[in-house]
Image (cartoon, rainbow, N blue to C red; front, side, top):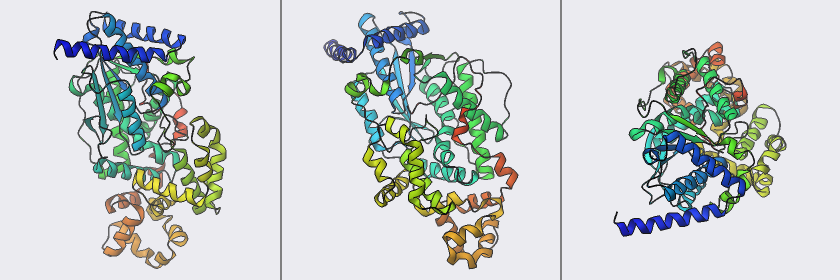
Length: 478
């Protein structure tokens, strides 16, 4: 970079900083100075800050977007008073529930913060256990979509159609690999910055630890001695849960391995946000022009990860299992979730439309786009007819596929792995969305095993916290 070009870019960065600061309240300016102080101290002083690299996990939600803007202001403020400033790594976990609108919001925020041409900023995306440069126009991985679809179905069947577990668990379990990968990739980082509260982070770790125990994973006594050790342990727990979920059909991916910095630091800023409502802060609404995505997944709230899709599943559940109408189920969910949806700024017309015939069609299209599952496959998941040696299979056929009742004995042969009709094998695969080996694995799961391996109702994430070195971590979707 020539001296003239560098001078021009520095001028641009100072303009960005001035625009940022212009949206700060007095409390936010104080928070910014405290954040700068924390980073400088963690780096070992202003002389060392130029070689310091920090990570923020950015899910595209309010808190992570706000935290990112605050970090950018800190980075540019230090650049204005010192020869060098810290390096910033921004990493996003691309999961099945991440819509194009969310990706566009990420790109828009990065552009407003002038990240794309700044060599001090590294924008990454992790998808299907692979690290890529961030590109909001990059098509979703077909293999990643297929993996997520199968995990969603397996969790749904093994939890007898638990709706929150079905929507959340695949992404929750992938966080262990995500943090291990983004903190060690390409030389690693020195610190992790998060705006999530310690309580929320501890809830996630408690959830993961509990289900690792349920899956039979050996849990070491005592807390990890380092943050790097914690992330490695999270990865091991997640792998154990996947192994239990898939049984002998589990195919492990390439491990992110070890590396990075042994003494990874944590810089929390949740205490700096106690007097701030990120969702209504001008920094977010005006500077970043942030708009919540009504169809996006909100994994930091396990009760309502995707309200409109949850409403659809409640409608199907009411119709299939409770002898009520689809509309009854949707309206029941909307009554309990209305306050939350209003806070998330989900438009009133979408809430009203959810229980209409058009809303059902819209939700069906959305479920197909997110998971690649049609309504018949979701209905099959809610019945979970294959577990317990097909204990519920006859009832499922009687209710949903009465014409197949005559083939019930032959379907049991299909699920037992015996010689059977190719046509029936294909019917089972098409109806469930799962390949035959996984259907047969579900069929073999004994009642005790199914109960032991129930991977979690999201509402149980509020269980007891686990001891961690300073703080736990959650990839914020907030």
